[in-house]
Length: 248
Image (cartoon, rainbow, N blue to C red; front, side):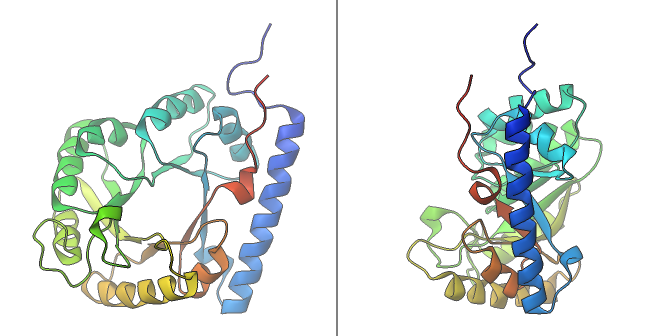
């Protein structure tokens, strides 16, 4: 009898437990330094390229927020995890094409990467017909204004990609719920500069959308700085999961 694909070896479970302890310690220290409570912070385990067994093992360790970047990997993984009797909260955090909306809304609880009015419309239509509850949405912000790398543009009057236009499209959609902002530190920018700029954008955004206070920012290498500038969700991959184990 062979192990199911969602089975994890005891040594791998120990690796994940150790990684989780280290990340939780970093988050606790960062929150203490910033005068924040750890209850304000959600750690999302970014499991792209890692097997479903890791998701199941992490759930057993208390990690129930899981992030994926690519629908073609996430959809079958979510199904495999569900078949193992585990129901994490799935966060879709990668760039999303409109033609993938119908697939993503079937398993994702949150989409972090909405950066156009057209994408918001596609997700709204897909959610209206493919879900029994609203889809939580974070609008992805372009910190450096480079539209080629994704992200809605703060201060722009662009009717499709301007931050205000995208936020209004999500807020006005029947099957979506606007919950906050997401950003990635631009290439070549120091995290301090990037997250300081993001905090400025978020402050203005919350004045217009006071119920959308989530701020998804920070990854394995810069989560402390992101937390200092108000991140409520940090997306952690390598610091938690390490190198993918050799498949046997």
